[in-house]
Length: 168
Image (cartoon, rainbow, N blue to C red; front, side, top):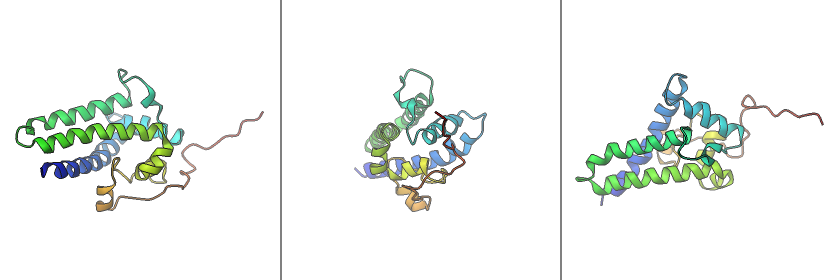
């Protein structure tokens, strides 16, 4: 049964590390497979006040949402060989992967819910520094590693997308 808390902590650390070093580190490079995270997901979230319309599209299109699901499935499959020796650990990883997608999707379809239930993730997208607040489901490793920045209620940087008034 120790596999359950270990699996949860491992998953949370995985969120933190993969988000920071893969999705933002490697994803900043335009020729990287992971570039969609920055160029599509972050751009849409900033433009639409946290809403990412990709989550309204079919899962059967090759989109940022589909790439996220494929990545989660690949991680789940990569840990499958451990199942015979650590079923609670692996089962927890799989449950955390499903929860990650469920929570992340809801956060980007319902910004008010995200502000109330995932303020650290809302801050990741809408705060001044999008290179902080790496955790999505729980801020444990952001808190432990000093990368949690609270911005809730602070307007995004003016350089993102200035509001232009249209003449009537």
